[in-house]
Amino acid sequence: MSEPRAAAQNRKARHEYFIDERVEAGIVLAGTEVKALREGRGNIVESYAGEKGGELFLFNAYIPGYGPAARFNHEPRRPRKLLLHRREVLRLTGAVARKGVTLVPLSIYFNERGRAKVELAIATGKKQHDKRETIKARDWNRQKQRLLRGRGRE
Image (cartoon, rainbow, N blue to C red; front, side, top):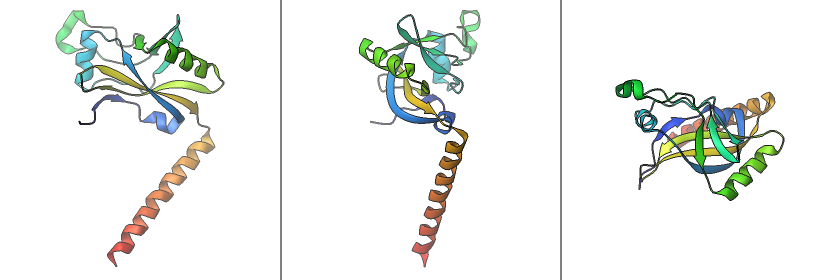
């Protein structure tokens, strides 16, 4: 079984947040949104998930109009309902109620059955010094790999 290809990714999230936990959720999409996502044209960098009326929604996700649909297109930045079990919704909204915790979408992809899924993360915001620490650790690990590779040749 192959890894599902992401239709939209939020690479910035790993830089801006500490990822505590990941959750997979279904998403309610219009037909033109599905076609635009299959072309890989979605953008979820500034989006977030939140509670509205006892349900979870994906806000500020940008899925551009599908060209051939012309006037039957969808609204690009409309809130999109997320499909989760009631217990999961309650658990996630409880986590968001804590200070500094947010629901961030990491990617939108199509699973093996062709259904659109959203990978959400329960995340805590990083401070500036945390971001610097992460960059420093990543650079040091890269440097270590270079040194180890260089020794193998001698």
